[in-house]
Amino acid sequence: MRKRVPILLTGLICLAAGYLLNSPWVSAASWLTSISAIPNQKGGQDVFGGYEVVAGWPKDLSTIPGNEQWTFGAGSSVFAESPDRIYAVEHGELPNIKRPMTKKLSDMGPSIFFPIGRLPWRDTTSSSPPGNGGTGQLAEEGMQAWERAGNKMGVDAKWERNILVFDGQGNLLPDTQNFMQYDAMMQRPHSITINPYDPDKAVWFVDDHKHTIWKFSHDGSKVLARYGTFGVPGADETHFNRPTYIDFFPNGDWVVADGYNGTRVVKFDKNGKMLAQWGQKGQNNNDIRPAYFNNVHGVAVDPKTLRIYVNDRGNHRVQVFDKDGKFLDQWKFGENPSDVHLIHYFDGAIWAFDRGTSKMLKYDLDGHFLYSWGTWGDFAGGFWGVHDFSTDQEGNFYVSEVDKGGAQKFRPRQGVNPNYLIGKPLRVAWK
Picture 1 (cartoon, rainbow, N blue to C red):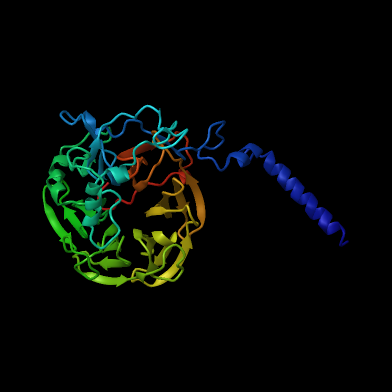
Picture 2 (picture 1 turned 90 degrees about the vertical axis):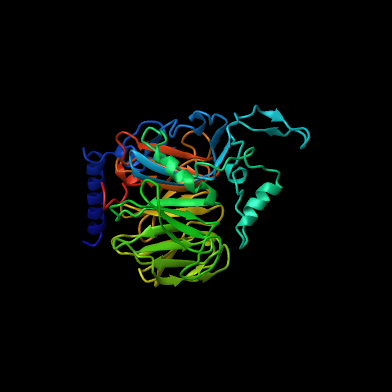
């Protein structure tokens, strides 16, 4: 009798497997293609995940009458308020120079050619002021280093249009002109966003070199508030030290990742009163201690649990805290070359961009890895230095890139499995 039981079980398993493989609902082919963004796709590959690039979006700045000699500088942030109103942030403008022909550089060494094939030929991070940004307490060091390298404003870069507003076709909207009044006070534009719970849709803007967070009216015509002491680093209620990103709670409270030089997370109420702060300087690359940070470069709030997800960039990890700063969990993105720039919450998942691997990464809220996509390059659809990303209510996906410059737009592919898309944004106070 005991010998018959395994035989019967084996037979039942085989019958079940055979039924599934021949079932109209589950075929062998669907099993094999279940990991692609398009179910049962024949041929091709998920180079751009569940998206296709919208070539020519946005329209180049050189198409502006009188601005033919200038193009996008380093793109540091993007936020889609709607499919027809998208904010982008850049570090000024760069000369509009065509890609050079490949040449042999004998003066550098034998058999050296540049540029090669599809390799990028200009890094907008170092070309745009203030260069790589400086690493010390004094943010002005970055601009000084950019000038010492022989760069001149008006020749090698132009400090204009740091905040851009585009429509769905990539045209500049008139409100861009309103935001240009603030160009002179900016030094290193870092991120831009809107509180999804705010019916007035005020625009929040972070300048990490000036250690300030600005709150502008929706059209950019007025300054509504400023947080941080302009140009002065610190670590208290009225000072930041190169802040990077902010996110919001449903009740209007907000949280700041502070930052490049700072080593803390700061929570404020809706009126700007500091409620809590936590974090201290940790080691770089391998620290596993809770609330120790090295480059606090990203923050995301789960609107349901109110958990705060913090990108501890220098240590290749996410640290998770409750709404009051109590440590709950952590996970790593991987060792070098992993270099995750930021994280966002979308549709019950955490999405991140890894500058080291040029991939979008999807995790569940407990840190389990779900999916990745993306490829490196400066061609349309390729990623090079994504520094922020956003989606709109139609599911379109946007990125800004510090190394390539400017921004890109992607649309969902026809027939795509929605699990492979970033997800639609949280928009509570407006549609």
